[in-house]
Image 1 (cartoon, rainbow, N blue to C red):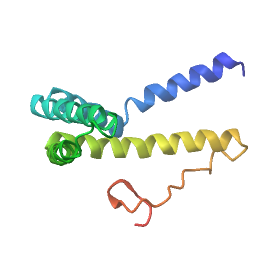
Image 2 (image 1 turned 45 degrees about the vertical axis):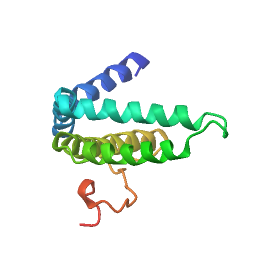
Image 3 (image 1 turned 180 degrees about the vertical axis):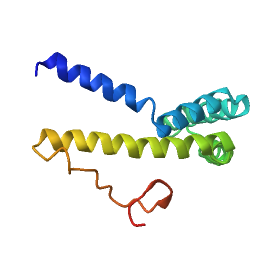
Length: 139
């Protein structure tokens, strides 16, 4: 088999990946989150606050306003909570987690095969993260 053959097989894997439910759900959730104007405004607000904190904390200690930093951090936590409780963001995170598990499995199988494991029996053995929502392991 020449390199071009394995590259074409890899492209076939890519085409099949794009048909997988986890991939499609992830792409749809990403698009929905990207199109949610309220969510995008919150993300922009969060980023602006983070920039303000960075600017303030990079000042010399004598010029730094610690009370302002405290208020900015408090505000940033509130905005972050709003982002993370946004339905589209929660859907995005769930879909991304499921997609990441699929990609980790694919990557692990390819890596193990490249190290001499049997392609018919090798598989991904996830380590427990404590989150049962994206795991099919403990059962």
